[in-house]
Length: 320
Image (cartoon, rainbow, N blue to C red; front, side, top):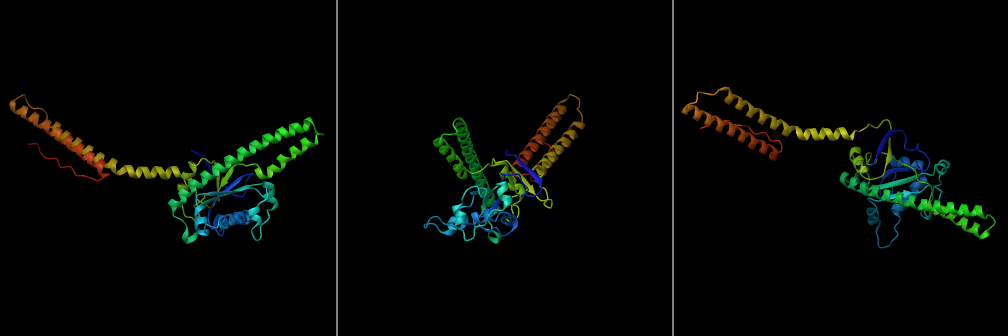
């Protein structure tokens, strides 16, 4: 399973080049909850995702269908201003990154886990399904970016080596400058993932359920929560649920076994009689009675397993 580390703190207290993860609706609204905090911290990122949610690239697609298609996807917003953003530049008043944002060069991953918000939020089951698909998309984008950047760094290393060998070659220097321009398209370094307890706020999905999905998603991350938010222990709740399911059946089996043992003790307490014809009949009766009791217990035990813990009374009659 993927490592999910939880800690208390501020989601915006992170090292440079980190990826900040939060859940979003597909309407482009960051008006409340954690999304509002992201909007305040990075207005430029809000403009970017707003255009992503409301811009229709094809005339054959309606806005409603476009926003529905975003459910279960991930928008990975690169650091500002590492590259030029034609999408953001088309917004009416594109926000500018703060000096702190330029210094930290962080990424923001928007997981579109619900099409609506407020009263129109999706069901918890639909949100969890969308979360699984969105995190899978994030994992793919992280892998592709790191592979592309690794190739870029290898090319840069070779070009620097060539430049040292012949610094006076103008043609060589021109080719060396090309990868430096390509860095804007490649993007900067990509660090660790930091997330809030996604879906557990205004979307109303218990954090324990989302955490189970994240553990299988393949994206290690540090989940940051404020001190005021209670801690949930997934393992303990799971164990409690399992114990509650097992208890009814185990109690029923104990009652059946105890009843059989008591009846057998009564039969054995009568003792053995002298070896006569009458005693032979008595021994036969006792053997039959013992077998009837054991068969009765086995039948009840099988009914207990088939009936899901339903209690059944035992009627022990005298053997004939």
